[in-house]
Image 1 (cartoon, rainbow, N blue to C red):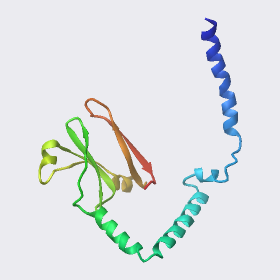
Image 2 (cartoon, helix red, strand yellow):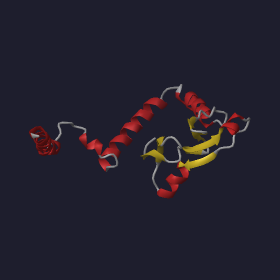
Image 3 (cartoon, rainbow, N blue to C red):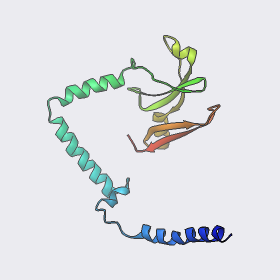
Image 4 (cartoon, rainbow, N blue to C red):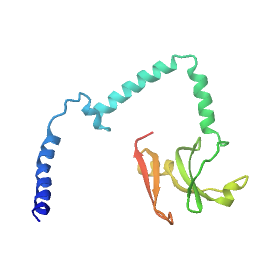
Amino acid sequence: MKTRVILPLLALSLFPRLHVAAQQPSDDPFVWLEDVEGQRSMEWVNAKNAATIAALTRSPLYQPFYDRIKQILDSKDKIAYPSILGNTLYNFWQDADHERGIWRRTTWVSYASANPVWETVIDLDSLSKAEGVTWSWAGASCFEPEYRRCLLALSRGGS
């Protein structure tokens, strides 16, 4: 009986110490980058991006590689690799028309056909425009066994 009382009290006694430790200043010189939308952070990111882009674009290989990769990524001829959730196939798709991407679904019969018909579940380009937020796809977790409800993971301002 004493153990049942003492262990929870001992555990609770640790919380104030954890709280104090969390309030102590960090020795990390880049802790200010944790404010991901802060002015200082964004200025730093933009400066690093500009330096990186300048270094990449100096190479004569840059533009041909960029053009070819963009052509491949924007192609409608890509294979739509699906995730199977119950009797439905889902696919996240990005192309020239869907820069942020769409999450879509189809049936087995449709997927096996020469021209599958996809139903858009969520269009991140439309959502981003409507909300004024740049959303990026980070995945979905759907609840078994019916897969009728899914929790979508979206990244604000991500890429």
